[in-house]
Image (tube, rainbow, N blue to C red):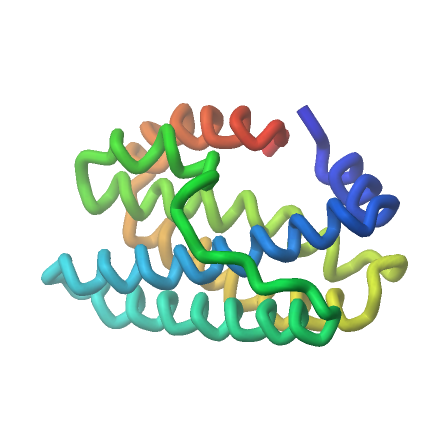
Length: 173
């Protein structure tokens, strides 16, 4: 299991690992936008507007990361659910909207740890730091929003699934 510091040290030391992570961020943002928009369209709740805003933010983040990849002459990856290790043990086990929101809260909170570390590290190239510093406040809002759409019991009940996803990624929370 890797800590955030270990992960950051690895991506700073290995351009191929950094490139891979940037590509995964692009794919993740694209997939998140689609999943969240689909969720917003499927619920008839007071949460539809906030879910649509989150989906729009995720599309914006995908655009920023795509522009970063293009500027760095990195081939834009195919966006596919294939190889999305984190979500595999989670999606099939969610029973309610509150659990879906709880899982969203865990996922956004997990990403925040790495985004904060990367955006604050002065050894990371300025273009990368800038993109993720711009993404950071939106993701902080997303984590809070998903928590507010969930419940303490749903967040707690999805914690085990979140841990399984982390294990598949080889990461510590």
